[in-house]
Length: 193
Image (cartoon, rainbow, N blue to C red; front, top):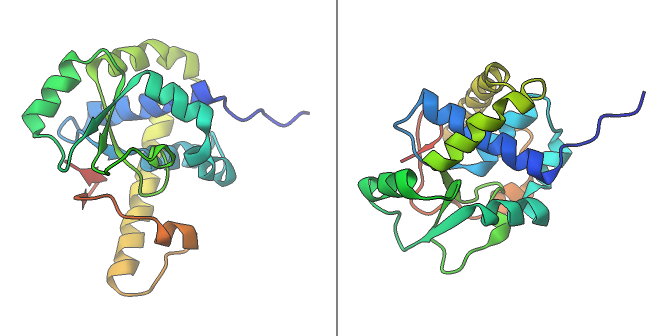
């Protein structure tokens, strides 16, 4: 029996938007999340393996697709929450990406410690329309279980870091060298607004 084909770039982006939508429906108070956390849950759901997840930051086709239906919001600070909520409601794009760098580093879109993303109302409408197509590959229940596992792993990782036990198991040296997200705040669930 042939091995299953890895998801295409379009499928990866669709599943990213599905995950963002389900999380917003569950916690509408959290607007922005890093892309790497969503894809970590997709990995834990068994859709991609760790090797595939690690290549997402250099997947030029995925980045191009995301930017075609995405909008970069640049500034020295993140925009006020009310202003961002207005963009979420009115933008025709599916995704807003918050960038506080001097220039956009496209390799950080979905990489470890990359940029934070916000799904728009238009993106959520699109994600809900394609959800039946992905029902067997990744449904809301499957993603929710994987997200809970991811949260548990991140809490354990944070606890080890706070106790000074060094690099958590499974983290790469490259992860440690990656710059932290400017002004990001780690909350109970994820990087929160």
